[in-house]
Amino acid sequence: MEKTTLFFGGTVSQNYEDYLGAFLFEPFAVDLAARLNFDAVNDVLELACGSGRLTKHIAETLPADVEFTATDLSADMISVAKTKVNSDRVRWATADMIDLQFINDSFDLVVCQFGLMLVPDQMKALAEILRVLKPGGKVVFNTWTDRDYNKVWAIGDKVLQSFFGENIVGQNPGPFALGDKELVFEMLKTTGFSETHATTLECIGETDSAANVAYGFIHGLPIGSFVQKRDAELMPEIIKSLEENYRNELGEHPLKAQQKALIFEAVK
Image (cartoon, rainbow, N blue to C red):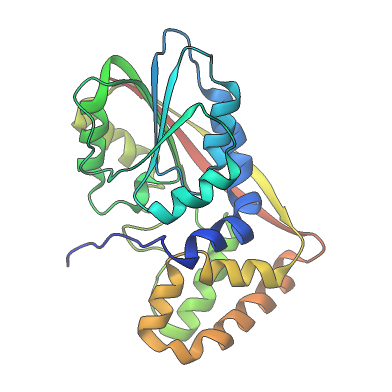
């Protein structure tokens, strides 16, 4: 079966930021930005910048003489990111990770937060990253790991399976498609990367409302499109069930959720 590109456009883009940005993605953006070393770096490329959480931190810490290009497949996501990143340091562009418009050997550093696992052809995306990196350049990216530990995703998947009988969150492409460290190492090695390294980061995401998490899980992710195609009339009932399960298992005011990710680094 042909893999399809997940859609983060339209109202999904703003909902992604409003309901999930600070809760799910900000702690990992802070971590990833802190890992970046700009010594001997002249050009930086960010892929799948989303609503600009990581972009903002990079723009704030980037040395004055370093060029920075932030990209996403979704022009709507870039529009949301521009409202958050008030910096003239960023050059924005729409870009498909499996067909980058940049010439060979263009960048010293490529970074990507929670994007590679959502690409239909992840090996081709890695090959494109290798191509646009300069010799000796580095890629740094993170992926979700251990779905059962990542409670927002695990609870959401349980609820969706109760309605549709399908493992939606576990599909490839999907958030946990690259949750196996050894698999990613093998992919990097096969592509041609060297000096591969991975670390694990665990944190707690906090937000105020179970209702907001439930709404964001459906309307701030491509999951909403899946539900619309299967049975749109079930949408209110699914959101209600999500809210109840999130409140019962994670609390409220604040809602706290365990999260876990892998951070990979590799050199061309």
